[in-house]
Amino acid sequence: MDPNPPESLEGEVQQLRARVRRLELALYRQGLLAEDWPGPAAAPAAQPQATPTQAMSQPAPPAPALVPAAPVGVPSFATLHPDKTQLDASLESRIGSQWFNRIGILAVLIGVAWFLKFAFDNHWIGPLGRVVIGLVAGAGLIAWSERFRSRGFIAFAYSLKSVGSGVLYLSLWAAFSLYHLVPAPVAFLAMIAVTAFNGFLSWIQNSQLLALYAIAGGFGTPLLVSTGENHEVSLFSYMLLLDLAVLILVALRPWSRLLFGAFLGSVFYIGGWYFSFYSNNQFARTAFFIACFFLVFALAPRLVQIDPAGSDPSTQTSAWDKLATVVLPIANAGLGFLAFFAMIDARQAEWAKPWLAVLFAAFYLLLLRLPARGRWKQSPALLAELHLAAAVVFLTIAIPLKASGHWITIGWLAEGAALLWISRRMRSAFLRVLAELCLILALFALLLNPSIVVAPVFNQRFATYLFAIAVFAFMAWLSYRSSVEEPEDFDRSWPALAALSVLIVNILILIAISLEIHTYWWGAGWRQGYAQYLQYRMYAQFSYSAFFMVFGAVLLALGFSRHSAFLRWQALVLLAASIAKVFLIDVSELSQGYRILSFLGLGALLLGVSFVYQRDWFNLRGNGARHS
Image (cartoon, one colour):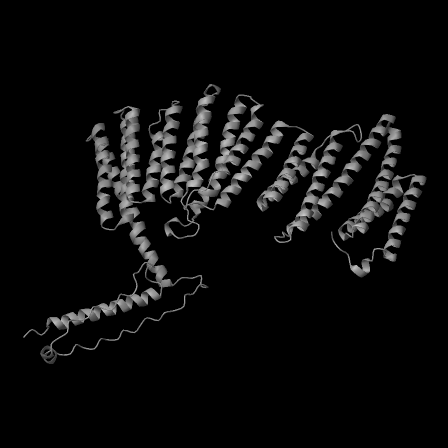
């Protein structure tokens, strides 16, 4: 009689399956199984009913052993140190599967290379045989790698493919450059075929690593078949086709690192060719190719496959995506402009430089109008801000290229005011930041311009200061209106911007009038001779003191009438500066009569201010100081 009847074996199998499912469930709860685990299986199919006779004759199956469920621990997110056992296992796996693999491949290559060198030195193998051996070995390694890939050794298979591709490239290079067995066009076409084959493999196997091998080989091909001669059309046409192929791959696969690699390779070849072969008679042809490269990489970031929502793990944002969507647009804009600018400068066409900047600004404004691409895209707001920033930067560059002197400052002031107004209409905080940066640049240009003025008041410097005062007054008014008219989406930075603008207006008024006082008395003194210059210097000091007192009094009156503590504090600071000047400078610089007038005027002004504060005509103690 069979000691293991079929019914008993089937029962044991069912028990084992149940145990395995319980173990899988415990591992899944601990996060040790992939998220795509199908989950607990349905209850096993019911066993066939045994007849009463079979049930009496068949021994009862042993009770299933209870497997204790693995404890489900709460994931810990606070620890920074993984389990030492896992680290050791990971390091061991990395050393055994990756490092030893690469070292072994390197050792084999070195051994084969030494053997071939020994054979070559002893003339065992001729030039044609050496090339044929290289081609056969490279193709054999690529074919052999497919055997390992089919068995699941993906990393090892890719390593063999990279070695095989390298052997093919080097063999073709040797056939052309060392042994002169084939002409350059034949070697070039053969290397293109190797590159295309690697690209095809990367596509059908969905491998970004193989695509990187293909791109590296594609960009290395011109160096390998270079003859040191100027072949601009052939070189740039080949590179343009290669970049377009990369662009197609990036648009269809989440392989953004290919795009950045293609950009770096293109910049390397364009720069190397320019410094070696460029001349003015190649301007039109070179401008056409650079424009093509610029357009490819300007449009490329809009095609990078990134899923902002993270619904597809293969398309989640990585550091390479940030390089392709943030760094690449900035670098492409800057290097593209520099390339055209250098060619225009070589032709000494100064009139075209500002229009080049305007053309770049218009191009990036046009990019803002292009719709975003479908589902797979980077944040459209980020790319739009980059294009907007590029347009503003190029417009800012165009102003000094076209204008000179105070007109540069006036142009930047007008640009800043226009951007601020547009930011208010569009409710764009980023555009407002650009406007503020432009106005800061204009302010520095205004204050640091070392202009020499002879005629007071009626001069370009004073006119520029008046325009700057008007622009910052407009900035204060616009900021104030924004903080008052839009309480529902109130931006707390608008009041601060309004206050800062008022402060800048008052400082510019002080500087502008002081400069004109200095210009008037300096010119009058030097026209009368050195002896009279000292006399007029005393007049200038008295004029400064009088102006500070009058302006301080005006600010104080405006502060009281507008109930603005901010204006009153500015007036008090200015009056304090006037006090310091009268007591420290006017005592020694002014004559007896002007000294008396200075002290009397200051004293009367201070007494009047003190009386107003003591009487509290504006009820400052009762209502408190209100800021406007």
